[in-house]
Length: 262
Ligand code: HXC
Image 1 (tube, rainbow, N blue to C red):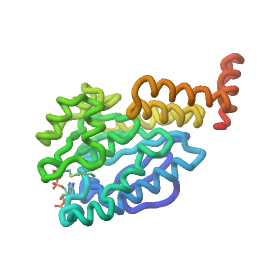
Image 2: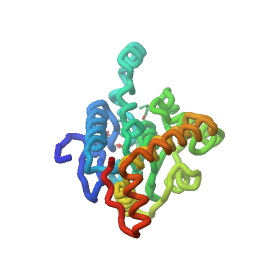
Image 3: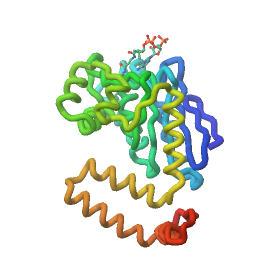
Image 4: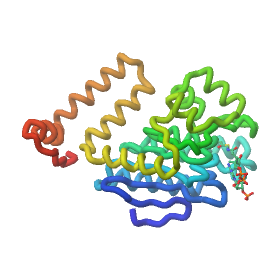
């Protein structure tokens, strides 16, 4: 925190909460390499910062992000895309940091913008959100996980229809289909609620919070049986943390837990 970037704004508006705002207004927050590198840096910095327990990622009221930068992509050929691992740097984004990230989605979240929102651990939307995977209209397909994450979240038939037609969907749809956890009337309410939830998460043991994120995400990759076994290993491990003793002692003594995050 404290560092200034060109295409994003970072701040710590509430206790334990890191806020990252995508800020490239001239291009509706289209995601290009310099912006992605800044995002990676900011996520990693908050992930390392012991005073931070959770993060919120948002854009402007007009656009969360209108997609990958079409002008940057338009001249790429196969050798360039494959040879230089186009999109590889995106894999360091919210899904690989250990602390939870909440996306607060207002305005356009299209293509890579929708994918970025879906990489986050929790999605909040407002009635003003406009989401979609319009890549088919450009002669390509989703490239940052859209075909996988959207399908898991809303089911195959609906995801297939959206990705094959390139039709946008509303914040209300995202909420009704279970892609978003909550919907709000205005962008302000959406961001505020995301910060509030992040503050709640940040008030808990960082160790337990990271473990929660890890095991819930495992459910996306493992079968139920292996997933439950994985959960149990991590669960057992938490009895080795000081925070487990602190949390349970505080309950017995009817006090508020003073976490050591150890
Ligand atoms: C580059 C973009 C952009 C994008 C908007 N802009 N989206 N530039 N890449 N994805 C720029 C416009 O060129 C324009 O710049 C300025 O932002 C304002 O946009 P307008 O189109 O004038 O605004 P509006 O009429 O309000 O329309 C908004 C819009 C439209 C519906 C969101 O901009 C649009 O359809 N954008 C493209 C959406 C899209 O296809 N996204 C998916 C990209 S593919 P100028 O200089 O003219 O003012 C993708 C692949 C991901 O994301 C693969 C893995 C990462």
